[in-house]
Length: 312
Image (cartoon, rainbow, N blue to C red; front, top):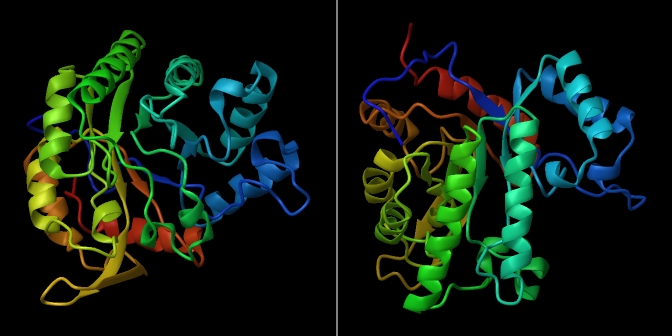
């Protein structure tokens, strides 16, 4: 959870790049997870060239739990050669309450926690979102189509809390923070529900990843971003940041959004970072971007973020 003071300054705050700018599967059908060393070297070289020294390892690209030790060491050696650290893993669309896959996903999450510790990471990030629906796979922007929804069922809620608590205890035993990402139509899909959920998990090392942009991009009525952050930032221990422009009808009959830089979108991050520092946020910041030159926009955003953080 957040603390009263932070140990970082604008110059030293850990800010990582996502891997969205790189295809998880290349044109010949080879997954990034299975790619030869030269592909990893080229990717990490590009990341270095735009000014990042940290990355989040999303399992959409590389699955630490499924990489044998020799390949793990190869990846980390290449990363070090580019001055890049790997402090966090993000396990996505592997919900521990996905119907029919609960036990498989729970076991995979446990293996990913073990791998994160073996890799020397600090954060295990995940959520309750599930694989894309057919409509989401076909949409230009996946958030414009309806995806899976967590049921309004106290028993399933309780199962989710119990399984996340189990994972959180495992992470704590290995010295890892565990972060839960805000995501629509899950039990982490509104500010109040997310706060209630993490409070019921009740572990000091388990907090929220307040990715509010996941919610303000939806083409439907949404909570005010100010209220979302006011309620979730006190529980934040890791943070995905991005932004979207948004327009909507006064009567809420329609809404639209497209990705933007952090500075030009709906969320006023200048104010949000002031609020985050005030409540003691001290976690890693992860720059995300969908569409266009993802890596380039993330690089622009990193420079912007450093102008908003406390000076040493």
